[in-house]
Amino acid sequence: MRTQQVAQPVCHLWQETRRRENDRVSQVLLGSTVSVLETSDDGEWVRVQGDDTYRGWAETRFLVDEVAPEATVSVPFADVRAEARADAPLVARLSILSTLTAHPPVGDWCPVTLPGGASGWLPVAALAPLPKKSPEVWATEFLGTPYLWGGSSAFGLDCSGLAQLCYRLAGITLRRDADIQRDDPRFIPVAQDALEPGDLVFFGKPEKITHVGLHLAGKTFIHAAGGAGTILTEWGDTRYSPSYVDARRLNPQRASDPVIRFEAETR
Image (tube, rainbow, N blue to C red):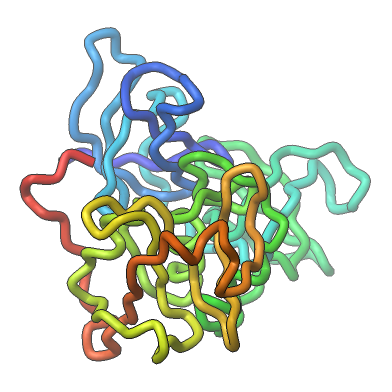
């Protein structure tokens, strides 16, 4: 199977070969590798699968052959500048977990090459090793992030995108979509009165999960809510508590297991 690499700060994945806001299903970040499953008749679109096994249509022009980037952006946003100074023209604004090629630094700045060939300078601090934090602690870094349907980056997040991004930052790859996350066999059910920080909490109906958040210490959970962005909500809030279904906790014995795609899935 052919693989390619994302050459845009964010590459949207769409349900069909068209760009309509409600048809966005996910996003993949600069430097991410995707597997190409099929190509549209006009060659302008490819159906791809990311490392989370989620599938969608991407515009061909945003993908290039792999270049094996080895540096990862470790701050929520990083501005690539045309020169090694903060007021130089902007080349690209990148989200945390974007990957690129870094060259030997010069002082506090590092020359970088982006997949696709663009080049510029990043502050060395933007490429420092990712700090070790648990998913729910990472989630608090994104408080106030705008809500974006299908969003998976610091530019905008939906509920499952927030959970996926924060677990990825903690070293665990999750699938997308709240219902798929609830069915992840690496996670085990947990009672509401036994919740621990980082547990995934699900809302909707047992037969149709529509929302997910991450439990925090005490009586609070964090989630990406339509119209509000990433917010904190108290348990007991009448907007959410009546639709609470259940919760899941990562089984530590299965934390290193790969993500599983079920044969019947179409997403």
